[in-house]
Length: 308
Image 1 (cartoon, helix red, strand yellow):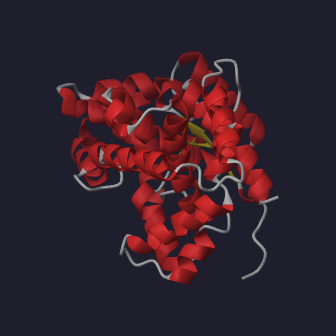
Image 2 (cartoon, helix red, strand yellow):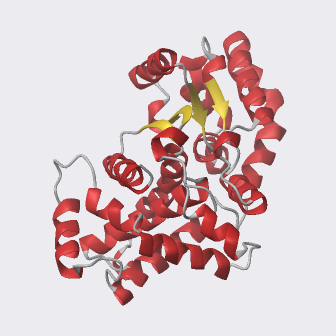
């Protein structure tokens, strides 16, 4: 294999927005930044689920869509919709190479742009014709066992947290000092980045362990492909490093899985790692969530050190 490309050079020309960034002043700032940077805004599958999933809670998805996209009706060309998390992971597994340049789903991008245009022309009534298509896409993304199945993701987080408590910081040279620094870091409300957590999550030992874990999934990874995807900037690496960083955050707080009891919060945080995975592949991630911002900042620095 040739030398891995640098992490900064691999970043794609998109801005990833958390759902809380699509309205009002946040939307205006994102639109201005996209225009200034000659980027598009990547609408990831998690955003789609959070917005249109309101229909599964006794609400009309169209009302939520109107609230979240009313500020984009003058700029539908800035919106691009990502391929699904599972689709990107499978693409990298099957091709054996990073899918960084294949983040966009052209069909869904055209669909969402047309929805936003129809919203501008006809209001909520203009979205009715998309009911069946939206329902089908939502079912595809959230069916039990799918990549965005929140119960499955929460169970995986619990297992990862308990692994760190069982094994300790085996990846660190000075385990106790590293654990103490991580604990101090995650309790500092003024800190901008979880650097120690991120360095641990992207260390050679952890990435090597993730390489082995891919093989144990029995989902078609070969040893060569798993190794390549964990030794070069890839969506697979970003996704699983983000999950590992969240698990390490809880380990640093001293919270075992049995103590992670606020299900709604933890389910949202497992979905937040999807934002991180996509965000780390792109120029920027914009979010109001402090935990996500600090993990993103730390992981970007750590990846720039790992892939200079």
